[in-house]
Length: 91
Image 1 (cartoon, one colour):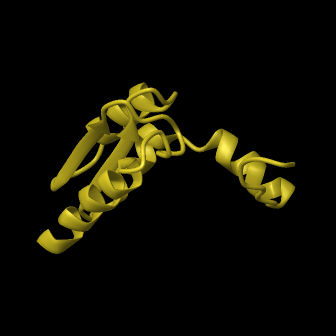
Image 2 (cartoon, one colour; image 1 turned 90 degrees about the horizontal axis):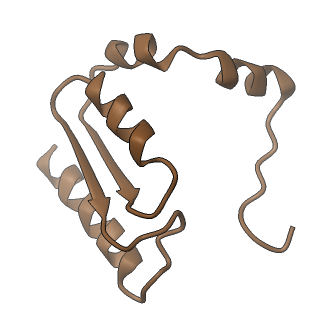
Image 3 (cartoon, one colour; image 1 turned 30 degrees about the vertical axis):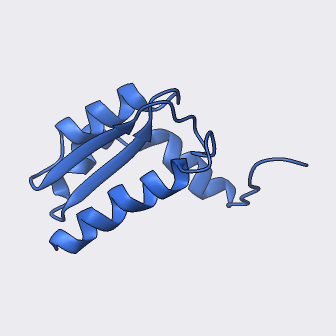
């Protein structure tokens, strides 16, 4: 491929990912959770659902104007870094 990222995983792992019940699995995690998503990405609805099942502390930040790779403007990746960095500073 001339674009994106290639990731190779085993068939068993791929099959497991497709069958995980995230609604049941997510509540078993007890760690601070920050999700930073792209406004124009395809994951917004899934992120909101996932966050709804997570324990506090939790936060969702949707970067306006961003697409999946957060490379829409020269400062978009800086905004992603800042959102992430600020969350880690709290803990």
